[in-house]
Amino acid sequence: MDLDTRHLRMICAIAETGSVTRAAARMGLSQPAITNQLHRVESLVGGSLFVRSRSGVEPTPLGRQVIARARIVLSEMDALFGDMRAPADPTGILRLGCVHLACVASIVNRVGEALPGREISLRIEPSATLLAEGLTHGHLDAALLGVIEGFDVTLTAPVVSRTLVPRYPIFIAMSAAHRLAGREEIDLADLREEAWISPPGADDGSLAALRASCRTAGFEPRVLYDAPSGAARPLVADGHGVRLVDPTWPPAQGTVVRPLAGEPQVARLVMAWRRDRLSTEGAADLYRGLATAFADHVDGNPAFSRWWHTHPEVHPLP
Image (tube, rainbow, N blue to C red):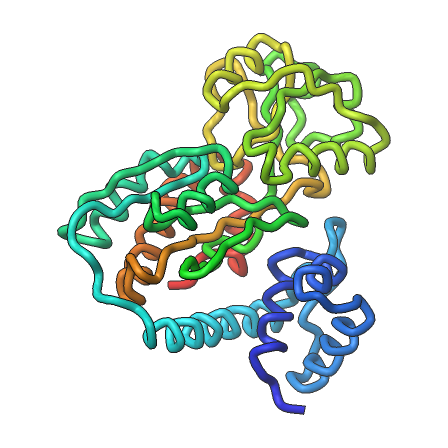
């Protein structure tokens, strides 16, 4: 058997979802089919690519090497076919969208550095679905989307995408006076009695994912509050509720941000852009700018910084 792009996409899908089952669903295959393909690929490369973990599967050292090279090959393939239709970069304003992440503070500067001569406008939106619609209707040229594991955001031509961060855990924010605030990580089951603030981007699947994770932990979450990300901070600080958050956010005054044991909530970051607005070279420059902006804030939360530096397989490609 020779490796082809199907096998490379399968390997990357397993790494990005952290699960053979979820990778099978993403690719429209049965679990036995994708398991058999994985075993054949492992036989060809001479070793196991993944091992089981508490949260699903994780790449082995060999797996990390294969995944990194697979992403490079797939990126070059996408660029090859993109070059057939990509126009020259237009001049003027680059209309950029982004979900509500800590790195929005750096995006304008870093993307501006990566695309000199382009003025950057930025729309910050908690919903990746609304950003995708903005791309489809031509209101945006490009966007950085956060996608909850197990859910997808529909992108239609001429919109294309490239994964920036294939997998990262969602953390929990709570009052610094909370009875569990002193723990290094929080077991979701210990939050069964808490009031919850609805996660941002509920129409993207984040609320459904929260309910599913809590049910797996043995309870139904009491979602009492619905507030934009910034407006929710006083509720958290005063102990009225807990909330799922992007792990790069530094804790707001009066709050702590902790990882959840077993990583029951996982997301990925995807860069999407319109091929009729941004050339392949421009898209590559935008990718580098967004990757640098994200990296600027990795150390904003020490708990996430530790996780990030022990998971090099999820780092953006150079």
